[in-house]
Image 1 (cartoon, rainbow over the protein chains, first blue to last red):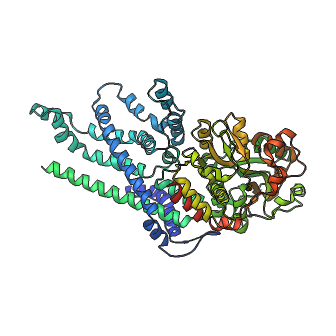
Image 2 (image 1 turned 90 degrees about the vertical axis):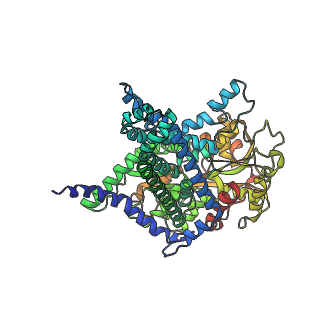
Image 3 (image 1 turned 60 degrees about the horizontal axis):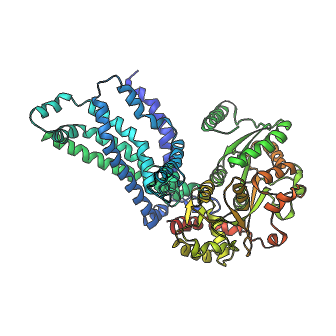
Length: 281
Length: 344
């Protein structure tokens, strides 16, 4: 049996479970909304035009992009040192540390967010602690703020970034760093001229993964951001579930998909070019 | 039994297998799936209806738990399907109208649901049975607001700036209450919209769920809100410092109903379930636990409970029912206003 045939089951599965529903969703997005029957068959771009022309949805998209970029950058900054430490670890504790990195993913997203609600609420652990030590008199608002969403999101996506970076950093030979140091490069130069350029493919992969997850944040945005903070995934859900407006919800979903895909491809291409230039130099 | 993702997948696999090997799954009259809210409502259905009334008839009940909006959307999406994912759908009165108009709900046969004879005439509808009802009142913290509010419009008072809270999931009812408070009519919300935009300047808070609003009332972050009287009753029992006032201009009634989708494959059992929902003992249990008022004439509440959760005759006479046709037609606009102009 040729090896190529081995990929057929996976391809069929993806076609049936991903491409099929997406084509169906795409078709729905071209329908016309009707209040009583949910939609009537049509071939119109009105839903896309409405989504792009409406300042509210442009604002929701801007919030989503900002949140995704902030969380991706924060995750990279926080994750890189940890990934480097894990990658260079020689001790037998390495497996344990790797498993511990994965700990946040062992709890369901909603359950984890419920924990954050308990911590960040007005009567939560953080406010009670601050009041207990006399730093504040009245509870400060942490829950239902963009900060809470960023905090909750970073906590979810950090393991993805750390593990992706660690696997790439592990592949960078330790002796190239030692060679740079022997030639007089201080640690900052070793990092910026040796480790960082060689880790760029991992940075690209980690950022791509994390950015996609952040763009599609749902439970964290709803439960920690509250009703007055809106990202794209909850906006899509609102149209499907509350408004029963499937055509517009489908159009919003495709706009989110296209924006995520475009930025991801663009980011990866830019990092790949930069990486090639550095290596060539 | 609660339907989990695993159950749903198992069910879907079984349905596929049945479709492949023996045509559509044979209808099993001994099982009904009830689309319902979770929490106390779902638990009371289990303890007061499923176990004592349905089990002796040999009918087992599964619950498909979700909020009102996803359930309505699911029923609309399944309209063309051979089989609905639920046999009994619990819903509020606006959705009952929408689903009835869309031809999704079966007509309730009075011979199979004989308890409809006991339903208060004002609540009778062809495609659903009324289960329980309540009214939208003004909830407030009596420690912070010592003069009881009199109107939905009291939420607009600048002295409560930053202390007004709303539950997001009740957006259409919140808007309707604001509209009545602002002097609007059931089929024109422009007065309500204007009043809400003014209120927005006073930094009202919108919470993602009723439970989140309850937590805000408990922590005294919020002092005043519009909410079902029944919820107020439950929360007060739970130790939240609240009282309520029925607005002088008339309160919005809310009726929670149940119907059977036309594509249910267990209609006989489903109609038995509707009949059981009208059982007087079960309705009294819902009143005692959740504060919702029975819809059947022969359900007698203890006097002190009735005084607490029922409206007086004068308050009942002033009830301000919603215009269902308007609410259905304007659903998208109401949601857009709430999300894009009020909350944003």
